Length: 260
Image 1: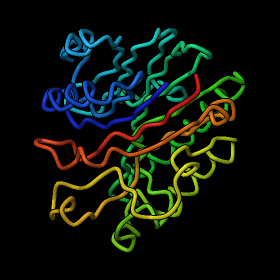
Image 2 (image 1 turned 120 degrees about the horizontal axis):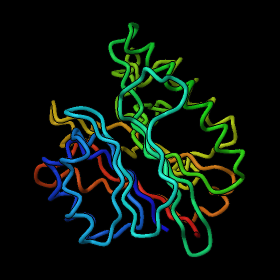
Image 3 (image 1 turned 30 degrees about the horizontal axis):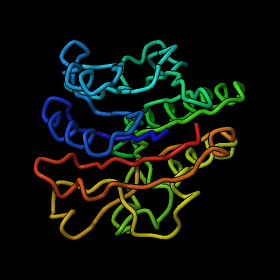
Image 4 (image 1 turned 180 degrees about the vertical axis):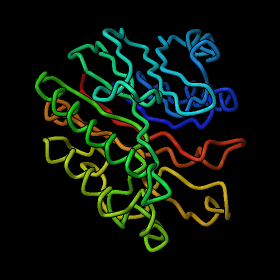
């Protein structure tokens, strides 16, 4: 079962690029972020005709997450628990029924948090604390769980081409990295780093400053795996070449393969 996460940066603007990639790569499950679209405006028929079931949690102009699955998808829930006043569409869960296992998948779009310090950074840290509580609950299922998405977290300096440029940014502040480590300390495995070591691996290149041309990237799109999912991990990768195509997202797909 290949599970890819992809911040598409506008589903209406980039649906053709997404469809082209789906036709080429054919992942069984796709976790999308930044739809920037209400549910009824998502061009779901484009994905349904490719064999995907489409479940969205949309929001006008901002945020928005989705799960596309070519396998049976059950028990879909929307929204991160813990704050009923939070109306931002950043979290969707569902259970994908594979050939040998059912996998609980989450598509998440963690807040950016800039400028920091400030209210947006406070929201980011509070959201990460709520995420930790939900992630802990999911571990009690004792089944494969995949938390995939745009984390807006640069875990370590090696995950940025120019770490010094990010030292005061909400994506790399010590408090952000500590909150990310607390997720790992619950018992989750960061899938890409379980398979690939060293620097030079990025999933995001800004549109400004010829970041792609200079390979000035950062790695902020991640899959965290429960122990049961980590035991089934057989591969992981980043499809960086998509960033060089016409009208690209500023992110590229990051994928994992599970024996499921």
